[in-house]
Image (cartoon, rainbow, N blue to C red; front, side, top):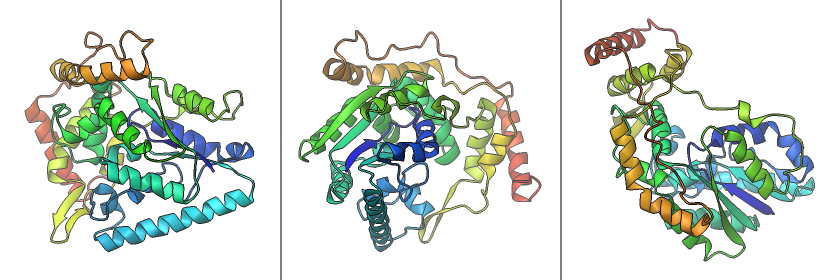
Length: 352
């Protein structure tokens, strides 16, 4: 079964694309393409966990209460069985192609053994040839966009993205390292390849059109518009409050059995989203923005020379256009407001 594996990176319109193929699941099936549901109804995030080493633990395993090696291996075996059944049914129905999309495949599988485990799993299910599709974005813009996600879901408490040497942000932004890692694994697996694409700022529709071109469906008219689908973004004020609340009502708490979801947190992030605390988007400091431009300049040039030699520069540093966000409250006022919200939330004074 021909397979397209769309792996991100994060913050390159992945959510929009995933929502779009979920909406168009039926029409894509008419052209022989399976959009699986056993790996996730929208984001096929379960596939990344299939690649995990058995002793791997992170928020993905915590969310699914996979606290031991046995728990994780059992989850992987069940996910394999469900996908195998779904593929069998699809083949019976005449489907011969598979499209999978999850940015977590790139961000969570950080070593060659996990990448190889994932690809071998697909090959064993006769899902090949495999075309891995990787979209790249300007590292400074990636870090700026990733910060909101880090505050919302990863308990980040700092006032801006970490230094480019931070392992998680480096995994996201060091495109040369990502490509070399995947290419090295693919070189040892027959009937596999990597296609590298660029993500233009604020144009989610390009992701759809590029992948449809790879699927040989560029001329097909579909019912819905991917450009209308996007992630929710928190305003700078909401982020300032949430990063403070992360210190006192974190998403994860440590117990004697390891990290667990904090039941007191509830739907705090969703509640903040509904408050509409401003319309402007977050912007990190110009100094941190420049650091990201400088840190990954060599990586960007390597990608350009190897994959886009027709371009003079892969990503222009947009420092002059970049606007750091401002909140018209002092740190002391923000601390006080966050404390009041904390007390109200914990005492049931705010409806979630």
